[in-house]
Image 1 (cartoon, rainbow, N blue to C red):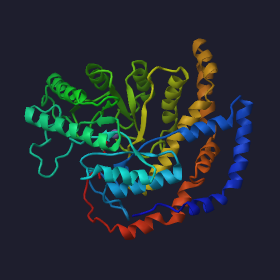
Image 2: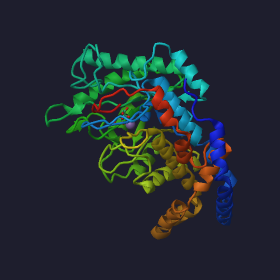
Image 3: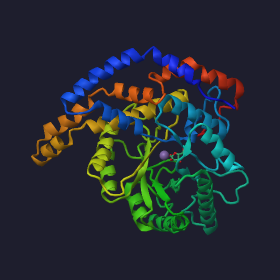
Image 4: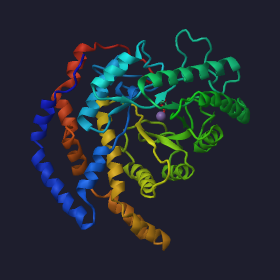
Length: 430
Ligand code: PSV
Ligand code: MN
């Protein structure tokens, strides 16, 4: 079994950077204290921050045209866990993994749980998959799953979700995230209302099977694979369904699942207001569900989303506890590197949102001082909090310069020897 990166290697690499880090950290500490902020407090908050890694994110992604496999890709969930462990070793903010079934199904879940335990990793939301047909599957999902016109197909899709809950129980999860690909490609193909009614009927069965303390997260997506309409198309359909189902049902916001330029931070605010924000799939997007690395194109948008989240924390909104996860496809980068970068970019948005002078902002809002309200947000966004993030990693045994440490460790080259290529340049997601 792979043991990850040697801690001594990370420590050695850190000795090269710790002097400069301390210098930058002290300078930032001074700037922040002039603004009434305590850098040590912010560093503790950075240390406590967590974002979950999706098991499927450590494989090389692809498009419907092609997939170009990377060297040493994980071939099963055990190897995926090993790569997830490396991401956490370096970043120290990704100690949870979200599995996807049936991709990650194993015969012995206690063995898988022990395997993750050894690396100090635990399990987050389980994800069901009724968007693909599996070998030997009785009914096809070609025309939908939970909202299919045939009761037999709906029953099969419900049964799969119930199985996912069982797997989750064995791993210690307490959330099931349901994204369905159901929709239509032609105007008139589907009766919108009936399809939504059928979805609700199936979702109620899954909801009824939720164990105590579990939540069901409903993930909306505007289009793809259905190109004309999607049953859970937007946050409106999602919150309606979550309200119909009950208290344990929440909406999950995947940043790539909206029309370009949609004000996602405002959607987040609405979901918080009505106690329906379940969590996030962080990624970035230019055109649609591009699954680009989080914060790589629109860091200000990601910051504005965290501004809403921190605002809810500041106001101590009851029951506010959204789950944070990445959901990306890495087509041309090393997935470990992209996931480390992305986790840190999400953490960065969180820390910047803590710097916002909230009292001043509320004042500017109340007096309609649009310019100063905007400048207040910009002042926090423009602050370079990198030394806080690096110090949080360093103090927890992570890497000050994680990408350099990863490359220096030759981890990828080592696993490539142990994991011969699965071959093929097939299309589609992993
Ligand atoms: C759908 O595009 C999605 O965002 C859902 O979260 C799925 O579970 C995941 O991607 C599959 O890659
Ligand atoms: Mn997603």
